[in-house]
Image (cartoon, rainbow, N blue to C red; front, side):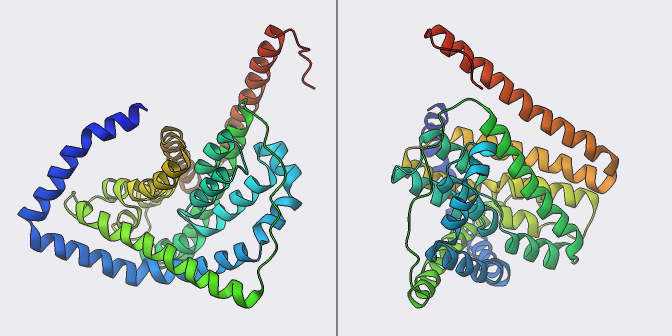
Length: 338
């Protein structure tokens, strides 16, 4: 609620600032928007559209739901997710922003999961897709795929760790198994997948073009620009260096305000809160940057980092059990949770 009030109070200032930029710099604004269009044509659409079609086809054929039912015991025990929530986590790991957030919001609106599970899914099921990450970093920024694959592994590992950590805190159990969905015939599924992927790519491109304008008025610094718009921030990196790798790891975890705006649109439609998502993604960025620094400079520190991450999950789980025990004892119920 505080975030919403702050955003509401800042709307007039943002409106005046945006209008002032359009009136004061009409040529620059048009040129920067054109740069955003070129960025979409050269990088965003080629890297995202084929992968969006593939993931949409998998959705139409109910592949994530079938995997979710198969791995439901693992998701329930490790991440406190239902089969449907687990399928959305898998979808978010392979599809890219903001497909996972849209699927989590839709599942909550259909009463397929509780609010606690939906809030956690917004954080852990909304990730940078492998095609975008490898295409931008491996092909355009670094010019080599090795560091890009390592950053992808870090991105996925931190996502899973964050899911374990959030699932360790006390909360209501998941609602149940993955919802039943009959696979659509392959011919109809392919047509529907192309339409869904085209709509999703157009939405992403619209946000990239829109945020490309204010980003270009900022200093030419990758971190600062990436905080606002991910694609522009990554494109501002040049070559593989330790600083660029750590910066890229943080930006991939954070996602940028452009991605946040897309996610919060889905969250608002479902009645979910924005603050946990923003805090979770910022934590994802910080841990990803630390892991990248360890991988590229001090590989020996990875083992203590993994131990610390595991200890955080264990302590969160034990603390959650103690709090639940206190609640049960106050109600006069048995406190043996085993």
